[in-house]
Image 1 (cartoon, rainbow, N blue to C red):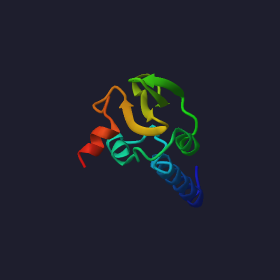
Image 2: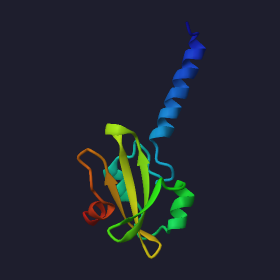
Image 3: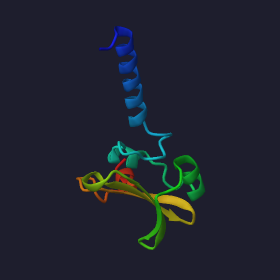
Length: 117
């Protein structure tokens, strides 16, 4: 069906794409595969402006008011696999990130993880 060289090429391409898909994009844009504890504990709070976030992560799926603060929402997945990262702004700086899904990390925040460091 496949020659040895062609199979090696396909396996190599698959491994490369898997590695790229699982790696964070500059550590800023979350992905469907971002692990909430790792992402939230390493996010640079109080360092990025709204504009810098959009330049590095692309436009958000939504802009909302969350707890009285302007927030950028990035959503991933569908149905039971739905999840989101909400970036809370205060005076144009990202001051917290809230993760939401149907799992054990639902509602956890970057401030929670970073306060335990």
